[in-house]
Image (cartoon, rainbow, N blue to C red; front, side, top):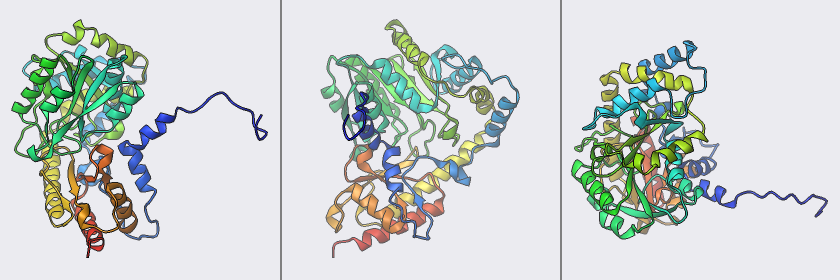
Length: 417
């Protein structure tokens, strides 16, 4: 007994709190805590990736009706199979096959609780003593957090800002060794707003094949491309290298809270089946939770009944918003955007600290911006680039204009005299 308290034997896992701090959610929660409650202006959130709260991004009525019909049918109140119900897997296989040179089978599709669970499952399936995985920098920090949680070593290759955020493939080759199991790409890009060309993706496939590693292709923003480069799925190169494709309905349909994602084997040569990677993935799914069955039940109608006009309107809104964002940033002396966004919902912006007073780094910039202007940006260090910012344009255009005007006033106020 010490101080009258019994000495309990359990202890918290110390690395979990530190790992969660560097996630997007962890950082934004901290910044939200710094909001000045006395500021009467509305808080403008330009750091998140959830467009669903804005009316211009509301999902299609066809998707809402599909959910209601699924729930009221009383056919989907049961537990679902580990990999997901067959009609949903068949519908997703057909949906993804439209962009591929071969046909996917429902057996290639595994349903998950959003794309986050798909990431968790594939990293868990790859984890083994001594193994390492190659991750993009900047990237999506959930990969680092979940790799650390699975005791999977991670190494970073750079995305090149002066080349439209292409992958530094020389770095990939230099980083890989006999214990490297996979590389991750995110296309369209979070956090950079880039869209990889067909030619670049082919080089990625050839590099990975030469190294004997698989490609994990995070395509949660699939088909959200509004620039010069069309979206090309990594699975198009599945005959060159085995690919695991991760995705969801969260972003394209603006329904992240519906928590329906997928992990798809885009590997027509059957390498992942022969090496028992598919078996390992199923083993991980057997001990994890499933997406809600009624959401799965709605998937066939969501995919079939959503009209192309809905997607065109969303892309037009994002294009307009990204243009506003890019032009407004150019008016702020201490911020530089090296590449105009062409997809997803984000852009990376570099801070020139030499032009500012009383600003130590990107985290300090974001905390003071929140306190002084009620505007939330995401510090670049969260996604791997110190003294950069990730700004989302998946908000109402008027909010982007207002938020970036406030950021301009903030930078002018802190400018070196």
